[in-house]
Length: 110
Image 1: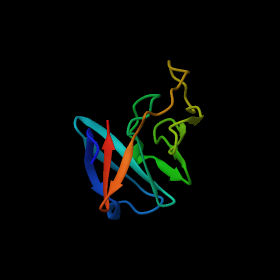
Image 2: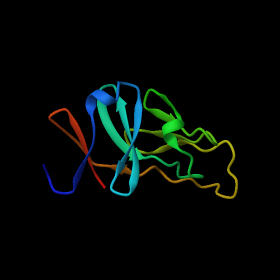
Image 3: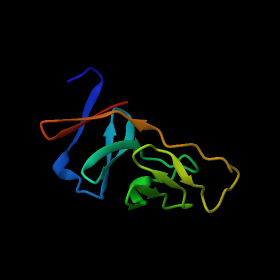
């Protein structure tokens, strides 16, 4: 295994179309299974810090449960701003993390 990767889950723990929040070091990361391909994104919305593990995943779009910002889980890109801009009208893309699968285990690099 390449240096810096941390084991966070088994692939059997995350069905297609589902997510799982995991801890990697001192960070919480959301692992997403989109059509059998796994992706790792930050678990907190960049708008107001909403817990994206409680959000709705439709295809490759993840919606924040607090203000409705939408992100592409494969890239972290914002595709729809929040429904309530509050004092932060700008919203950043979600950070994404390198992910590897070895022996049915998921590893991410922070």
